[in-house]
Image (cartoon, rainbow, N blue to C red; front, side, top):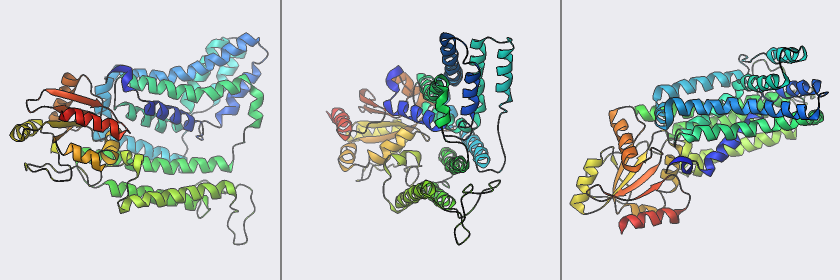
Length: 453
């Protein structure tokens, strides 16, 4: 899988969803009236000039975000980004950043970039020191920077996802993200009167801000678990991370129901009258999200009892941690893997006259986790895979063996994208390969059948 073929529809959807969710963040929404008021003050220009200014403003947003993706691709490439994203220290640093941003959103302190910069650009334009085009471009760039406090978690998640594939992924991902993020502002700047129909900032925005803070705390647990997997602590396991997520959903539920207040939050319900018991009035706008989070918590809790959580499993550590390496020639009903030892797997394959199924995987690879949780566990898949000698090779760990296995994957199969599944004969000659995630059991069974022919 090379080039654009490595960019899946799921990745594009992730980028677009991240861009859309960023629009709801408390750093972005208050900037809407500031941005639109800028274009209102310059509405007396010709229609062509006004449209050009709006287009350049949107271009400034797109260029700024896309430049980040281009920089990542140019500086480190796919292999470098993969190693960077899997580095335990980097994951701990990202967890610390998410924690800092979460505490900011929860009201423990304030992080913001002054909107005065936008006002100075406006003044410079009206004084003739800047052209309309230059000021609109700077407006787009500075708007991106002022929103970075809240958009950074979405961007970070997207770039980590991009590390699973080819060098084009961070560029395309950031381009899609930026277009979705910029489009509403282009529309609002073109038709400024629509701004009057938007809801005003208030208690509802404080609640969104707080809920985002708790979501970012969930991300903290995820990134710490990545470091745990690389360093083999076996502390932040599947059940521990899942228990943290369940606890956070319950905290959000109680918060939305008015059980407690956050720092610097004078009222959870604006000017609403308190109830007879002295608690704030709980309207549908708070009760319905609270019920959603309560249901989510109850569903997550089923994962602690052995139920599979489907796609969400890809964001959790594997159940039971890493599979133990085996030396026995007998392969039981459950899948048994030779870990990071392809030569031993080939020796066993020659002894048993079987072929080798190679799983190129990563400790922080979400698509790999999805396949392990939702594809490898299917009975018909398990039966077919047990006809091979199974070798699991990690390419993103901390050590020389992981670098060598990544180089071997790239040299022999022309890609470092994860996951990659290869079937080789006992002499190591390639029989067939299967790149990436699939949700079709029949497609994966067909690949395994080809490897058995």
